[in-house]
Amino acid sequence: MELPAQTFQVTRADLVRYAGASGDFNPIHWSDRVATTVGLPGVIAHGMFTMALVGRAVTEWAGSPDAVVEYGVRFTRPVVVPDDDQGTEIEVTARVREVTGDGLTRLEVTATCLGEKVLSQARATIRTAR
Image 1 (tube, rainbow, N blue to C red):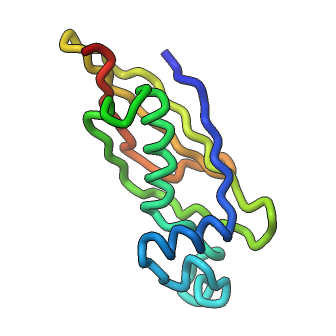
Image 2 (cartoon, one colour):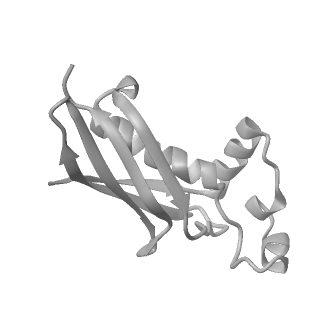
């Protein structure tokens, strides 16, 4: 069973706000010059910001934050965020991997940007019955 896809717009302004909230002011998240100097294709979103957006999708599917029992990912590719008003999009989808007898549902989650997976081994367990 597939869960409904969710799409998140990510702009440079989002990266600035996240940097302020997290305290992560690494210039690869705001300076094209620095990002390209270190071999990146451009400014990239914070990995934990990407993970948080995917976690928001999982929480929405679960119905409430306390229904998320477990959640984990591995970072595969950076999310490059262009310096324009549109930014980029992260699409999050999931499929049910297993429904257990104890009211848990295990999800296999996919996050893509421009058609490429940006996370691997993205999995979540949500409580579906109380």
